[in-house]
Image 1: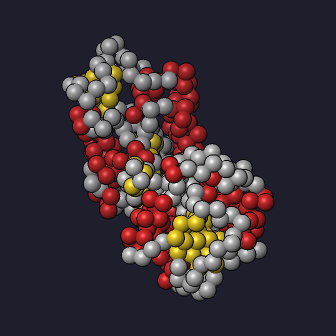
Image 2: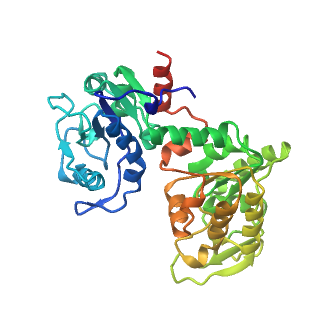
Image 3: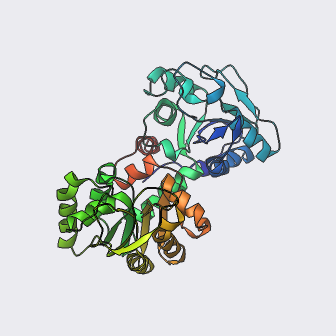
Length: 393
């Protein structure tokens, strides 16, 4: 991937518009989890330290275009950043048409870009308005790179220069390292409730990886495929032929989808439900599978320890309930301890990483959900395509 890096540019005195992903949870006017702000600060601080006139915008929530409200205001985010920088940060409301000045070394936050008319549909006039505000456009919101919007794609096509921010660059470098030229053996762990939502990811990875570990509800469909009774477990019976085809395709090239030999079951989805360990072929009709058993978890841990690259998206059990979290915990600990290059992404995966306190032991944690999955699928992300096009000009 060839794109211009913001860190290679002289930004002194330049008007720099940064599209960050600051879509964080806010409650009663306060940011409740600021991981995305932390991830975005390197790019913002680099531009400030370079003496640029810095403008940052982001989306927050799902506003209706043309309708601003307190609920979708970036004020809590501006306050959070002001505290980090220990100086006031101006928040500019109606900014698309300009009419404001920014000093060298100053940061202003431009209100929720999704309130602007024409943003979501990548309207050309809106994109050109954004582009007119800056000398350099910096795309740093990998989390929205899979959407072609005025603030993620259009502005970059019309701005004098379009470059990747520090976070965007790190994301793309990590993904390329894990997927374009991975150290072998390559292992992918894909969990989730349904095969259907991850089917394209499973199909794309089945052609690349040496072992494809399936977890959660997805694994139940594979357990059924090999002839096991899965009781009342979450399962998509209509996708059994698809699971069969994936297993056969991988087997034909000497790769595999490991299937659990022991499972942890319960009779209802409840925090107080007792966990019962069973052989995978001994699940009763009134039971549900909520986790993999210790034998299966250890087999997966051994695979991870011998891997060269591990991509992790999704837990292997209902880890929110401790009694059904041992499988995910075992995998998390193996990922923490392996010498492999490890790449993790997705909301549930990050929640597991935080729960088992292995944040600093994963090689790279992607802040994105949808964009991360689409990249795993082998899709071209619009914002990445834009950066590549602009690098050739």
